[in-house]
Amino acid sequence: MSDSFQASNAAAIADALWDSADFAGAEAAWQRALGEDADDPVALHGLGKLQLARNALSAAALLLERALGLLTALDHGAVGEWLPQVQQDLAWCYYRLDRYDLAAPHLAALPDGAGLAAQLAAFAGRTPYRMSADVAEIQLPFWGNDPLPIVPLRFGDREYPFVIDTGSSQLVIDSAFLAELSLPRYGMREVISASGTPTLIEHTIIPELLLDTVRMADVPAEVMDVRRFAPQLGGLIGTNFLQRFFVDCDWSNERLTLRPVRQLDPFDHWQRALSAPCFYMDSHILLAETQLNDLTTMGYLASGMAGASVACAAHTALQAGLDLNDEAATRDAVSSGGGQTLQSAGVPRLCVGDQCQRDAEALVGLFPDALAWRYGFNVGAMVGHDFFKAQRWGIDFQAMRIFFGE
View (spheres, rainbow, N blue to C red):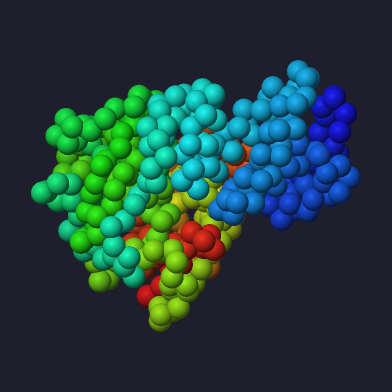
């Protein structure tokens, strides 16, 4: 590769296909680019971020390390816009591999990454999420299910109610726990909720918690004012926590079952199961192809969003043919970003893969452009709790599929 930097035609075509959510087409074009130049950093980065989205973390790390090394060796002005993107993807890759020692330096070099980098560096070689027992499964009963299913986690001698939220990152705890449990503090950062509202979070490490009878040690956690919008809650169980297990959320029997990932085919025993591929973006974001009537878009999977089956921007609602003429139809929605009052509209057919819900309810008004276009392609919807509660659901993070069963 020469010292000048310019994306090849094949790599540029691949990027355009990625931006239209044609992931198979993008993969083929990036492979063509590498066939022409095995040291094409744009193609290596593209394939690396695709493997990251598939949760194929070892393959992603190899590709992203090669891309970063090649870009770092170049002396060209255009490289500057690529370096942070590759470094961020590599940071999330090591983060999800629990290689905090490798993730922390990359995060520290990124804007707003210092707090999380300090949290990860504080592990100092310790493995996070260590469990005290080798168990086949952990069952947590629902303490309630209105408006969201709540399960107990024990800190010390007390149990606290937590919501299962695939839209959150680490375990999220209320800010009161910092003083109550004398937890360390590793800095703050600002995150943007689905409504576009900035929210401050702080980073800490929980020395130990109890899942039923199983102790888990050194659990990274985010701290925010959870009780501001949900006074009854201790916090949220996010995707980084859940990814250690096959997740089985059984609404009818009111229990959450967590099975360590070494078990094979955890959903074979379900009487009926439909599954859909999903993608794992950045630190914790889950996406799946979603249909609102005849409109196909990518959708965020956010089991902790209460108030409706789906939320979307006004332009997505119009493209899907939703009726927005009833200005009096409003609903309140609650998620980790807080509460919002939004316009309500009916969705005759809402689907994730082949799992469909008829006469669903949509909340219209979310989605600033930064959220809708953060990955290049459009993410037009957020699938919430009222869709998930209609059936038993589970996630296989190894195969990156979400299951729906009876």
